[in-house]
Amino acid sequence: LRLDIQNAEKLRVISELTSVFAHEIRNPMQVTRGFLQLLDDPDISESKKQYIKISIEELDRANDIINEFLSFGKPTVDNSTKINVGKQLEQVVNILENFALNYDVKIKKDIHDSCWIFANPQKLNQSLINILKNAVESMPNGGNVWVACMSTEDGFIKVMIKDEGIGMTRKQLDSLGSPFYSLKEKGTGLGMMVSYQIIHSFKGKIKVNSNQNIGTEFTILFPQLP
Ligand code: ADP
Ligand code: MG
Image (cartoon, rainbow, N blue to C red; front, side, top):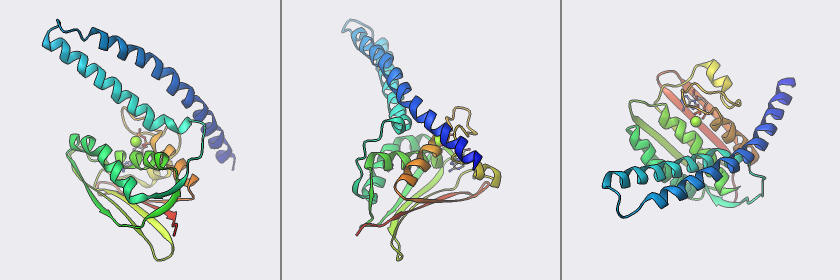
């Protein structure tokens, strides 16, 4: 119980700080982007044009990362509505298609119709992106990731995200979802925490199966809407 309270308190502080950070970091980035555009003058060399283009693209990418991870901290206006999980999964796969290509990872889909749940589409996307991103990152030498959604006979919508990556030990699995837990050199340790938070807020349940050097499978169950 004491640990739960400590975690709840950590979460509250993080979610307050993140909205401040997101705002404070975006401003200087926008100023930098503006000046970069001004530098892009017709007289400059092709190579300098290229550097400016790359700089702007990288700034935009950083902005995407902020959106992805830190929108969690936004004050929650609840935009929950009836949404099609299959459609959201398609979007999420599209967003991460290029990212996966960089890892030589193929994403395979098995998306069934009529996967209706009550949720906020942006938040659901964010939670799925974070899980799918980890699946891709777990395979530094490439491989396959499978994403699926279907309805179950007992009234749930089941989402599955499965990889054939490095997997986790029992102990690592136990730490999954706690704030700042990361084994990656440049990890944030926020992705899973954010995903769990979001999924629980939609009354979803998460089950993770993982075996070292075999892979990891996330199963998420949401209450189904008619
Ligand atoms: P980050 O990805 O920034 O490290 P996350 O919260 O997304 O933070 O994940 C926390 C940790 O959980 C990762 O560093 C990794 O060790 C482990 N993990 C998460 N998903 C997987 C997966 N699909 N396969 C193996 N390890 C994973
Ligand atoms: Mg992650």
